[in-house]
Length: 263
Image (cartoon, rainbow, N blue to C red; front, side, top):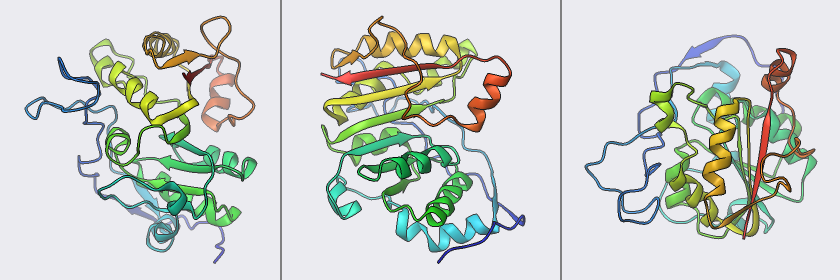
């Protein structure tokens, strides 16, 4: 059923419980493989903070009526993507899609691909579901959970064709750098989930974080930088320009795009 414009009535959500954090081995335990067998006593480090949000009545309706259509429930066992989508097709996995407008644009431009979007901000998930309904998008599914746990527990190795990480929180203060999602263990985890030839794409408007991404991904033996100069790429035509990015351009901010291919 199609809907009209969302109403401007808001519902205040309680803070999300801390089970949706990037808890699971952003930093690899000493002497063990990256992202596996985390010592149970180790204090987890989260790469994001889930704050209380305001959700429109339309977004609340989307969670009630559209989540069964687009949502992937938390559970045990590896995801069977042909079963999830009802077809076999290349899979793009986006981590942190925000309000989902860019993901909808990608899905519309590439109907031959399947897209899995992950976001922990519930109003953003609601917005994406409304947009998918409005545009009659059938090749998007949504996860509302911690990215690291999903990659570790629900996605088999060598099953993803593309992983997108656009404008993650840069955590600019030095004492918060450990909270950045791009860490050696995370990059190794992403690389294992990519098929040979698959691509890990990143973008940021924070130059120190871009340098950190370049150095960290460049050290992963499973990945090869797609840049012929060994650093950054022009914005690929496949990446939609977000409103956030447009605002940054008006303010004179730069944007750095990176792409690493699974060898």
